[in-house]
Length: 443
Image 1 (cartoon, rainbow, N blue to C red):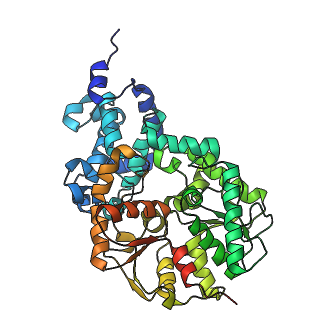
Image 2: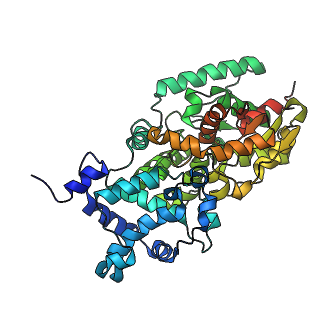
Image 3: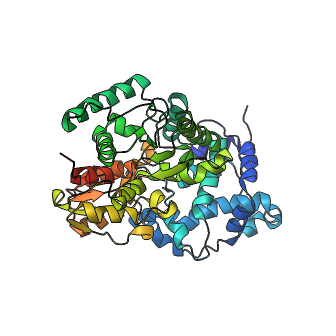
């Protein structure tokens, strides 16, 4: 039996009939006064276009932020404004049907890294990223998140980290790295402690460090040792990432951030230090209190902020002559534009390298590398992601740098792909790795 909307369903390419009625209800619940004001205020001036790396790289009108807003705006008008209900054709209002759902998926997931550069440059101050996430949340309620991104969230919920690393594998990796570092530093004390209670710092990291970048973990442990820090990892919940921020599922996001906070409480640590992850900082520092409905009783800070604090207090000493290659800095969108951590990394690099040069534009006006918004997990959009990354690749090339520093492992992964795609011939390093290379250790 043919169901209403099956023709549109076939055209849209969705394999199963989406619950569009449920989607409309979910969207209606998401539209508060602030979002309604934004959706009523966009005048489609198009001036946001030049802020978007997707549009600048491709010239595709569908990549313009105003186009993405327009898709969400048209559904808002159709169901939540009187003119849209009565005169949809005259007001630009459109039904939320399978065809529209497919357009939302392609635009809001496939052509946006949620970098918020458009928000910063909007002439009327609209929070465009919030509009995009509301659309993603609607699709999440309909179970229409791209499967690769959804799988990342599901894995984090099921296993405690987004890569499904077993506890045994994590503990064995930490033990191996601990032995390596003990030998290097001629120390018998635990240098990568796990589940040590009543310490100052619980350090949360990206599980990609455990799987693929163990030297990054060793760099942080080396710095903590030099600073005389009391710290620990958690055996169970140590993942700084939270892809619930990207797929729009607040329930999942709440569980993931809540587990990390419970690790701090159970070990009675005084501070949660978030590893080099832009979206992990925004999710756990700024969004989690709203998701969880309470302000944590402990401090939450970034490892970048902590490293700058160590330098100001004289707890670590660096020798710039140990890093002689020209270094440039990529500003992660979430950490800088949305998180407010802007000058600390520059303060650190000025003391850790001999030759530091800025990209242009930089700081809040930086261009996204293209790795955020869950893009790295959504392999179906990989070609678009690399094409949009051309803007960042050209920024890097113009600096003449041999090393690109960035305090975000998502950015490390994307920049590594851009390095190969555009033949940049650079090294990609985290801030902790560069600091570790410059450390002056007591003999």
